[in-house]
Each structure stands twice: as structure tokens, then as C-alpha cells.
Image (tube, rainbow, N blue to C red; front, side, top):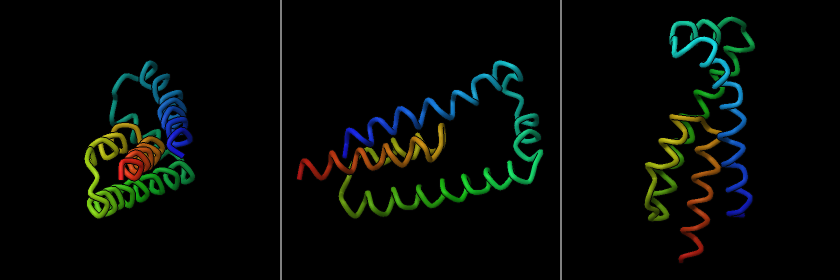
Length: 104
């Protein structure tokens, strides 16, 4: 499973950034434009609210499950979630969890 999670980490970075980087190249880091573009349609707002809730749930899961299992490096998937998104944070946490379980 750790190889599967490793592949998903690559996709979890590549796919979101394949959309975000061209936007940044076109608009710069204009936060007000970013918020305008995100909330321009109800379906866009729906998707971002879903991602926001998922990220909050994931961070809680990382902290709870990681401490329960005695894992280290819990900050890494949290930072991945905040910098890239759930698409990186979740497979990264599951990858670290698999490695931790292998050691035991």
C-alpha cells in the first residue's frame, strides 16, 4: 500500500498544481482575484467548501490517529494539506502510517 500512497502523493501534487500554476502565471499572487475566481459560481463555491471541510477533518484525523499510533512527522502531512490540499495530505499521512506500521 505504501507504493500506492506514494503514487497518489505525486498525483496529489501534480494535478492541483497543473491548474494552479498557470493561474498564478496569468494573475500573479492576487489573493482578491483568487477569491473572486473561486466564488464566481455556486459550483466553484461548493467545491471549495467541500475541500475546506475535508482539510479540517483530515487535520483532526492526522492529529488523533497519529498520536494514537505514536507516529512522528505528523507536521508533514498537515503542512502538505495546507500548502497543496487534501490530495497530498491524505496519501502522505497514509504513507507515513504504513511505514510506521511496518516498523512495528
